[in-house]
View 1: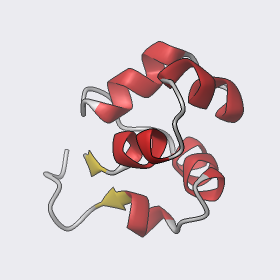
View 2: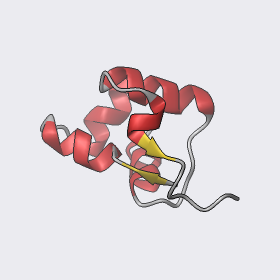
View 3: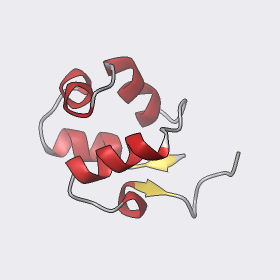
Length: 68
């Protein structure tokens, strides 16, 4: 799934580990989301969007993503 997690994380100057700690997942999970290897659960997508003060649709681009 195409997303803006890395861009938003870097804009705030956070490491993957720091972001993971903020939303309750590992650094590896954040890395997998940023690289498109893992699609987050609806709850994790919600937590990430809330953390960045965005809607889920602003953070994750469903229109340009391939449906699994």
